[in-house]
Image (cartoon, rainbow, N blue to C red):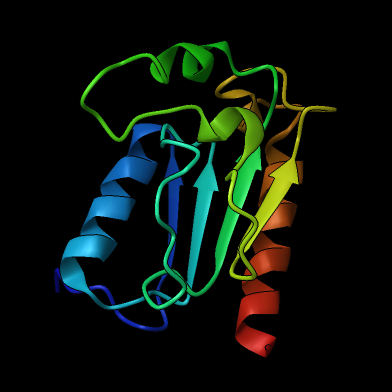
Length: 130
């Protein structure tokens, strides 16, 4: 099926986060959890709790690729993966990974994959036990 369901957990990295964002906005059905890893999204993008009831954002100040992405005109791309979502909303959890993620894809390095996976597992458990 090409439908997003209410119990779905969507995980995206970089531009994949933009795809997830558009799919949820266009589909109108909120997934259980959206997990953005180094999102190439504008930091002020609308994460309406009705469509995005649970959003977790992993970000790092060491993401040079996304520091440049915010300068691309006429796109939803931006630097959310550098500093998280600017708007502090109850449905959005920013997790600063600057202490261990040293670049745009470092969340998936051999040294960090276990940390990223543990965060994902913990947030999924939390979302389904609320």
